[in-house]
Image 1 (cartoon, one colour):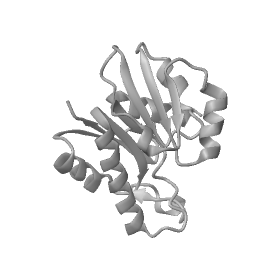
Image 2 (spheres, one colour):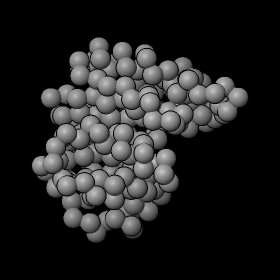
Image 3 (cartoon, rainbow, N blue to C red):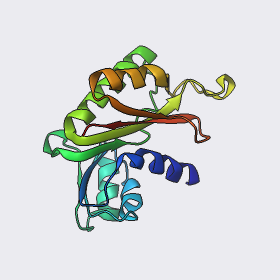
Amino acid sequence: MKAQQLRFGKVCSVLDTEEKASVIDYGCGYGALLPYLQSRPTDLDYWGYDMCQTMVDAAKAEYGGEDGAHFTTDRSTLPRADYCIASGIFSFKLDAANDEWHDYMLATIDDMASLATRGIAFNALTTYSEPEKQRPELYYADPLPLFDYCKRNISRRVALLHDYGLFDFTIIVRMS
């Protein structure tokens, strides 16, 4: 739980406002990011999106009555938002090949950018993890090509955070 809160802090560092903001939680799962966002001094319009209906149902059961909170499994219903954040969605590749998962990551990053007007943020496990602790069902991304991809294709304002003591990294992309 402490690691999750640390990760949330890193991806939420893209939020550079204390004014009203709209946020898409891309791969929201059961909605754990929402209480973290609500603890900030920002008036929030939150959209939780996940492909798994069971997860969205759990999020709706827990947070569906919150003001400004919306949950969906239908990508086409998402509005453009100020920010699009993804935490933990790139870790489990299961039996997908690494090159296929990398392509999936890039397509997802592009989709996130298409949904956001001010910035995106995501995290992933790092190839700098200790080899003996790496697991075959997990995907360990090289942060440098992803940084370069975001810098060349999305915005010139990109930050790579890789100094917070976990076996992952966060990329922040500011678009405005």
